[in-house]
Each structure stands twice: as structure tokens, then as C-alpha cells.
Length: 153
Image (cartoon, one colour):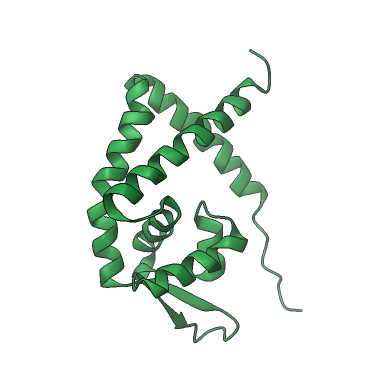
């Protein structure tokens, strides 16, 4: 196998399936995939909130786009911004009860779409191998991008 075949296939699968999942979520729940992703990350966070920079790092949405998505979610009443008492320059995005309800309602559609379009096309062993291989790459990336805290003199 060519050394770039896995990468090229990953990109093609992502490009093919992301619009399908987005269409299904929007048709069934009026919820774009980018919104679902941000709501999912906030729901999993302690206190169901993250700083904007942490949300930008965690969500699949680009860091530059996360602020716009949070603005849209805030207008829809699904997220609210909270001041960060520890850092006046940053704010938290916090999941509202309405946002959590919307996420929970859309979750079966999201999971079914992943099963139908992705994991349902491979055996359980293949799905585990894909998850393990991609997890290995992600862990290596995360380890290489950790910025050590500066110590005070």
C-alpha cells in the first residue's frame, strides 16, 4: 500500500460522510453537524462549559469558526456565554438546558447515521482497528503539541 493511501482514504471518507450526517441532522432536528459537535463537547465537559479556546481545541470546528458557531447557538438559546472570573480576557461557553435537550433528541439520529454510513460498512474487528490506529495518531499529535507552562523566576 502506498504510504499516502490511508491518508487519502481518510480524507475522502470524511468528505463523503460529513455532508450526509449534516443533512440527516438538519432534516430531522434542524441542527447542523457543527452545532451538534459543539453541543457534544460542551455536554462532556465539567460543568457543561468550556472556555472558548478549549472549545476551539476540542471541537471539530476550526478555532476561527468556533466563535461564530457559539454566536449562532447562543441566538438559538442552546448555549450561553459566561464571564471567566479567573481571566477577564476569556469567556466560557455553557450548555443550556435547552441545548442539552436538543443534543439528546438528536443523538439517536447521529449515532444511527454513523452506524449506517461508517461502522456498519465494516466488521467489529475492523472498526476497532480503525479506532485504535486513528487514536494512536491522535495521541501522538496531542503529545507533540503540548506546550509546557512557563515557570516564574
